[in-house]
Image (cartoon, rainbow, N blue to C red; front, side):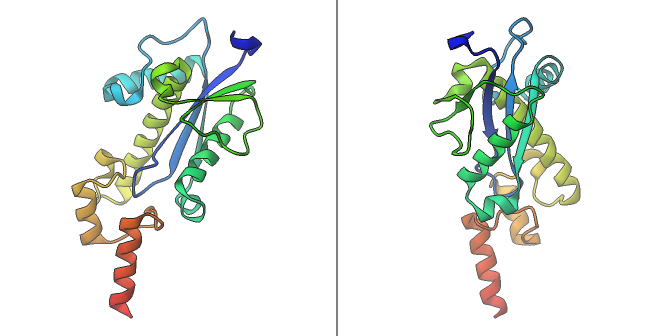
Length: 198
C-alpha cells in the first residue's frame, strides 16, 4: 500500500450548505480485495445506485459516521463543525486508520494521524468517493426521518437545502429546532420576528 500505510481511510462530509440538520461525515477503509464496482463522487450517481453502494460498503468495508449537531454548527461555524464530524468519523472506525485522505484543502486541526488533503478527492480517490456516498446517503435518510416530524419544509426531497419549498415552509411555519440559527436566512428571519414582537 501507499508509503507503507496499510489502513488508509477516505474521509468526506456532506451538509455544509443546508439551512437545517446536522453536518455528517464518513470515514471508510476499503478492503483491497473487495472494492465495490462503480464507486464515484456521490453527486454523479443516481439515488438508486448510491443506496446500493451504501449497502455494499456497510457490508464489505470498515465504515464510521460522525455528526456535528445544529448547536455545534451555531456555536463554532460550519467549517469547524464539519471538521468535528470528520474527526468523530475517524475515531469511530472498528480499527484505527494509520493514514487518512481528507476531501478538500484543509484538514481538521485536531487530527492526530498522518493525512493528506485531496482537492476534488471524491473524483480522485476510491476511498473518499466511498466516504462521500456513505455520508450523503446517511444524511439524506436522516433528513427524511426529520421530515416526518416537520412535514412543511420538503426535507425528504431537499435535505434541508434552501429550495423554494423550504423557504415557503419557513415563511408559513417559522423556524424549528433543527434550523441553523447562525445561517443568514434563518438569522434574518429570527431578527425580523424579534423586532416585530419588541
